[in-house]
Image (tube, rainbow, N blue to C red):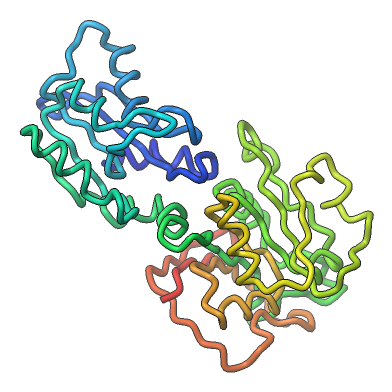
Length: 332
């Protein structure tokens, strides 16, 4: 299943509104990997179909009957833009199907397990379940609530400031952390900032270098209370200007609902402290990623600009990002 997860992660940021899924086929004795696959894009073959095709291409004379397929998410059991994966699994005559996690869609959860088990296939569920659920967390939030999964990221000094003095320059976080933000952007459908951030930083919010290869640029949304924004902002003048949209005078909750209806399953909130605090207070943020730099003494703005806003994190991971500390966790 670890190999299937590795395959599935290749689809992050590419499959929306579908989930990222990976699949691996192994021999009867479990010692040989016969095929691997991942879902590349909505409307394209699912991971199971890709893995079966890979196995057949590598071993054209070898039957898959009796072998085992590992898949991070319960196979689909209905036909849409693609055929049902349960049909392909039955046709290949797998002896065993190992599933990381059930489909979060309440209309489909458990359906494939019942279909496959009814034919005598050995079905196991819940292998590396936490990792598999993390892989589909964007899809799960969207399919159950209609809203996108929101990750809020920020860089802060040790004293909680989100800006530096003019003499210190612009960047709080180091180059490794800024590279990691590129990875986060590549995994999300859209980036959302506030009007204040747009005016003060004039960001591009684009994917660059290796992160842009084979990917569409994320949608870029600006939420502002003041209607007028400078016409010469990068968001309005670069070659991806058609992927920029401004929401004027709307609440963050309303904007997220609108984006969810458009099929956007994940949003990276790269705003300043005001919108960050509002999102926490209104329980609109699902996950945070904070880069804490080893700097004491920042500028005039702090991350939590409103007092008495409290949120507990779970599934917390603290890692090094160059000289910075990277803190990631979900909002309880």
